Length: 255
Image 1 (cartoon, rainbow, N blue to C red):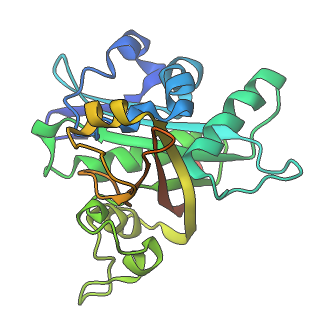
Image 2: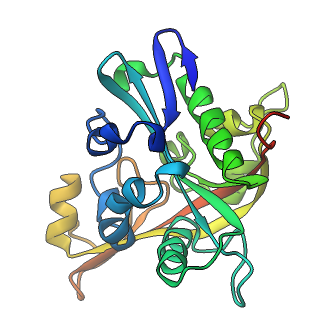
């Protein structure tokens, strides 16, 4: 258990009564993100199926943050710890391995989400530390994370490679969320060029974004890290999101 101010952070497995409440948080995710088909199919099952790899924060009776991760077998042929398809890939592998009874060799974070009223209190650092601790208690020596840089959406036309290279005068990453990971001891490994994919009709994209989607080509969408590709003739627009793979070494319990 971790405490910060009056906030208590624990593995979800220790507080199963909160399982149905972890999505009560007021969030700022872009409206199109939940329509990634892998997320639609599997994300809602993560907390129930992998509670030892998830953490929850409460302030009194209020759920104020969640952290989700999943274990997978990175040693199978054709797999690696940091795949190009990032978030989508590790989520699919985790459920496939669970179904086949495969022992996991790696763990990937999926998200750390803090209620908007609790931003700016250092809770993201505490949640990341709690997620690492939870992973360590399951016998793993590392936590991987396909990080979604929080300020990248302000510059969607800048390549992720160039964006990640940016540093402040103190040598830390310019992006706030990548900086949290690096200050917590994480090391940047590589870009996941197709970490999430959202494809929809033009009507769906208009509904999700409020934009007209009435011309071919790349369209800048609020909240998107890169432009969305619009194809009028096919009545389709596709968003392929890059993330940044970060690896955290994890200490075993009691060390």
